[in-house]
Image: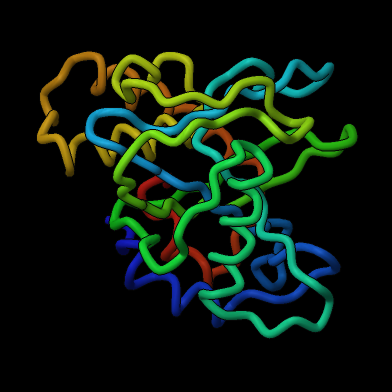
Length: 216
């Protein structure tokens, strides 16, 4: 099994490099992304991806977040990831997470594939979790999303982009004790199959193989 994110992040940071404006696994084409599982009771914050020609996840649901953007020469740390994530969540939804309450959640991250500017790109996506006291008003504030809303995560699964579906189903099984929910099982199974396809298209250096054992 892949290591939990709590334990893998220090190892991940050791093999990352500052590639232009994105954090990336050294010696590979795999960037680093992060998403936030923001929950309030039984509601979770989702965004709907905007319609965009050539983008395979158009109109699909996802957890807010994205690629970890950094300034060239910036020191790489766990704060680097968290700062980038919170900024992106705020841009996409208008909700600014309290960084002190965000934590890496121990469900395996995995590699996603997406198209940007007609170029196929790959990212290892790390999930973070935050509990909020109330469902604050949200609204889309970034061109990449058309909607931001609080939803029942089980109902959202069938419309989630693959990596997000794997993460959400993993959280549901751990936090909500729904390992035998048929909707969760079916959605996760289909999403994992898709993620395995993504992995086949990119070289992952030996030093980073510990990140993707669940996708092999």
